[in-house]
Amino acid sequence: MIQKEKLLLIIKREYLTRLKSKVFIISTILAPVVMILLLVLPALVVTMSGDRVRQFYVFDETGAVGQELVAADSVRYRLTDTVPDSLRQALIRGEIEGFLVIPHELLDGEGRALFFHGGTVGMTVTSRIRSDVQRTVRDIRLDRLDTPAEVRQVLADRVQTEHLTISAEGEETAHSEFYMVLGFIMGFIIYGAMFGYGAVIMRSVMEEKTSRIVEVIASAVRPFELLMGKVAGVALLGLTQFTIWAVSGAMLLAVAGPLISFFYTPATPETVNAAESAAEVAAFSIPPIGPMIWIGFVLFFLLGFLIYSALFAAVGSAVDQESDSQQLQIPIIMLIIVPIMFLMPVSDDPASTLSIVLSMVPFFAPILMPVRMAVLQIPFWQFGLTILLMILTFVVLIWLSARIYRTGILMYGKKATFRELLKWMREK
Image 1: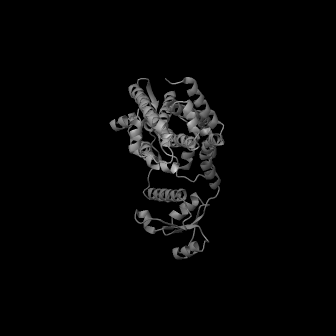
Image 2: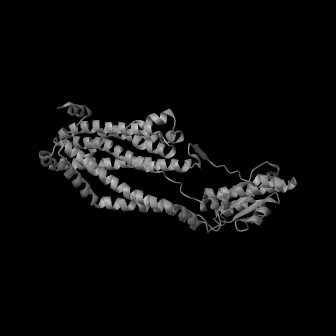
Image 3: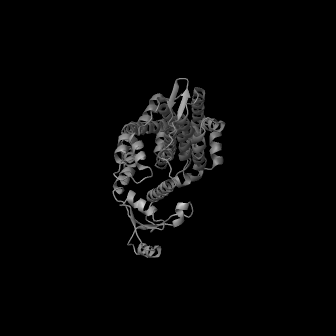
């Protein structure tokens, strides 16, 4: 029988000791800060860099395209009679930032415009120039054909497509891209937690083993209770940290729209169709995230953590140094990496047979099931069966790991092999 008082004492020790550590405090604070920086800094960089508009010379053989470009944007474009060879030399000397060559046959639908620069122009600028030239040539050709204004409007209009989902409750706007990204984030968070907290337990076991403290503890507590206490204590620590991060994340999501709208409204938009893009960003809002997504995330995080922590603890008890654990960790690492390889197929078709089967495998479910739950409302039987399978898997693994643990923690100076681990599992 498990002695509850001793088990709770071990859980409390593992939890409080690590809760007060500097590593825990710093990592807990830094994660929301990093989230804010990732949200704001890219937008801030775009805004700050948007004030500088580069000027490019235009050598025009058509006699029309260059004039229209300058008329539309005299700051960015400047007509020149200097031949391309001389412009090349000026570009090499750093006297100009770039130049356009517009061949005379471009208005006849032949040839191509050439844009030369010194390699310091990014994709945004090149996309803007390509769009400007294409729009200008199109307008001139339409003018030559005396195209009616109505036809021009048809060509300029953008076709809007709205994605909707239909259920028994009715229709609602779908946000597939957002929920897919959300699922990916949840999957990668759990992926990182498996490695991070699993390594914490493994190192904890090795430290106690090498310092011989475990000999004293083992004389008062059964190895199974000690293992369970360590796993449960670190699990509560991880849940505490993720609760703090979840609250911080929810607060960030609430202000994400206004932040993005504020920073992504430059005076001189640099992107293609910038005015329309700015309007879309200004209306940006975070779609609602249902409670089942959060509940599923917490459950699969905890169960996945328990499953892999039991395995990492067994590895830690079988070796004296972290360098000796590499070979024994390979099967565990492969079990964590494999579901990452299937993230894209599962998110693209969450209702496929492959997605259902993979997401219900206990070792893969912690990463793949949250992705499916974010993108798709999965049947309750799949959710319940997966939870049941993971609980059963944990019970079996913690029992097997405890058998390895009771022998391994008292062995020193010897690197265990897979064969020896199997032998320890069979010992009574």
